Amino acid sequence: MVVSGSTDEGNDIFATLIEFDGRWSIPAGAMSCCRATAGAMVGVYEQKFPEKVAVEWLDESENRIYYGEVAIDKAGYKLAKTLPAYTWVSTREIETNITPYLIIGMEKLVK
Image 1 (cartoon, helix red, strand yellow):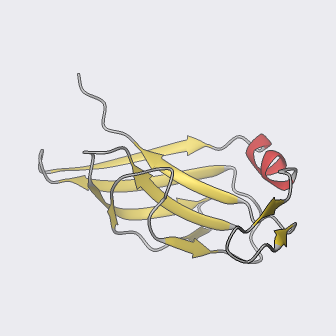
Image 2 (cartoon, one colour):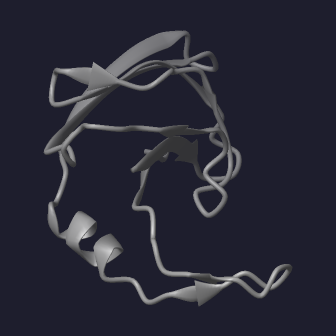
């Protein structure tokens, strides 16, 4: 599984914690646009697909630290495992071993 954090355009934040199921984490740090590219990614091995993610982040524009927890729908893993094969255009190789990607997307809501 490959895990990453990202935000929407214009919502740069600094994550101080990205933790899964209270048991394992990935390196935190600057997050920025965009979810489609996901920025820096981390390969995760021998971990089950998480049921919960906790994120702590700093919003420098407000000088505040936030913390949030969210349940993760297990259907996402099932969907990723059933994605069809695809062809690498540059090498014409057919990729059949699809790696699930879990992108932790952050969005700043304007009130």
